[in-house]
Image 1: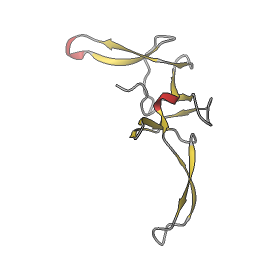
Image 2: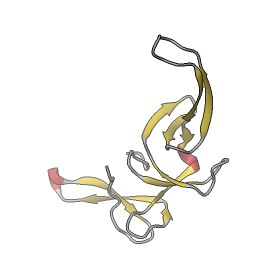
Image 3: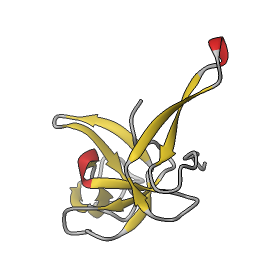
Length: 112
């Protein structure tokens, strides 16, 4: 189970956008491992040629994946950046693994 999921609020720890917070749009595999895309963070310019009559050419700003090690999950209950712990809830067949904040001990729910 990855520690960062789609819909999580994260704090950027490294790079040109260090210190900013955002919501994860998607988690994807890259050549360097897992990367996450956060809108407005790690933007890159792409030069676009027109492909169809309706599409215009120009320079687009696109969010580029940032490595998962360069972000930290922000707990929704205590609003602190935290490492994620895992706990097992339930017994037998109802047993499931959940993510938990290391500061306050509350379960980290994905907000959609």
